[in-house]
Amino acid sequence: MQRRTLLQQLGTSLGTLALSGFLTHAARRATGTSPLAMRETHFVPRAKRVIVLFMFGGPSHLDSFDPKPQLTRHHGQPLPFQAPRVLSFPLRHGNLVGSPFRFQRHGESGTWVSDRFPHLAKLADDLCVVNSMHCSNSRHGGAVLEWHTGTDTFIRPSLGSWVTYGLGSENQDLPGYITICQALSQGGANNFGSAFLPAAFQGTPLGSGGIAASEALIPFIRGKNPRHLQQLELEMLRKMAAAQNQEIGSDPQGTARLASFELALRMQNEAPLAQDLASESTATQRLYGLNDPATEDFGRQCLMARRFAERGVRFVQCNSNGWDHHSQLEQGMTNMCRAVDQPIAGLLTDLKQRGMLEETLVIWGGEFGRTPTAENANGRDHNPHGFTVWMAGGGVRAGLTYGQTDDYGYYAVEGKVHFHDLHATILHLLGLDHQRLTFRYAGRDFRLTDVHGAVVHDLLA
Image (cartoon, rainbow, N blue to C red; front, side, top):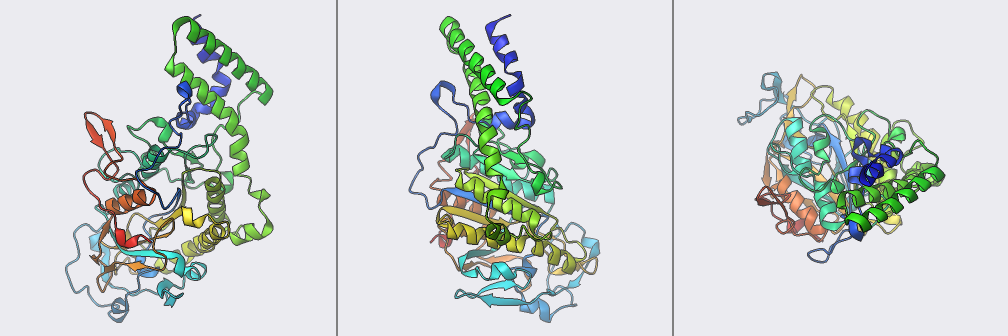
């Protein structure tokens, strides 16, 4: 048997961790250089890391951060202009429907927030609210993919993959990009994949949509053998690899495989520590809502995000599923907002108290908004033409409300921001020029924003 073959086979017990793409994400220290080693930025960054709070389904901007008095006044009347043809279910549409919720200005900034977000409203002066988002697709699959990758038609690297490709990671014992309870539908793994970027930059999933956050663990983090046997196996692999390199020269794939095994062993200590929420104080757990069944699940996600972020993970995404309110809007929005409001406010408060918010860019939003017209009498349809995303920390202008939709909230009409522009702005805050962050593939230089996108400088502090 060749030494190379034996090297591969002896790594089997450690290599069990490679299932589910885990080890392909591992930082591979071939010839002493890791793909996830920290890199120089194009210019001085305002943020070091990103936490995305993604609301799958498309939360209604009209019932959260973009009040429309005109819509309320004309409740029950026909839409006074032609609706776009891209509605998901045009035959089920009715007349205008005002929000069932009350809006109020909050903080010194006077930021409008719905009464469904009472905890977040107290932090209104920390938010940079963009009410003029728009995208190119009215279907969940395409719009979710567009949010995450910048395109709805091709398989391209995800935002988190581009960020880790551009910056590397501050912790070589953890993945640079983690997504928690990611939905497996609507684009699936492509939403956190690396496509043609090296596999080291793809997202590592913790759990999946529909699985409780308490069960969201890195898959196959424990090998079959006890740790001391794994260490002996690893030492044998090191010796055999060294002997092989002396006899036939360096084998980059073998070296990378060995480095992956080494990282897997290190992560058996580091990853469980990062996910050990029991080590947090009772006050911190209550801050995130872990004491309340309604908020416990997303609270766990947010608290894990903070713990990963403070350990040097570059990009973390938390995922809330269930915002697609084609019917039962009032009850649905009430339940979903209840589940995420306190955890998100707890995350922002905790980051501020720890001095992390200034260097952490927090982003909230979904793949699109909702229509001002009724669907199924008591719901709203998809609306890619105008919706809301907000950011906090990481160099954005706190207390700013930017852009506008029309009087009924259908179209972005002032300060329009496409996903390409949002992506360019995120990279800029991280010290990366979206036009210079490229990867050569199939004869051309690819970038996250393709040939589009412009930094929205008005959003920058």
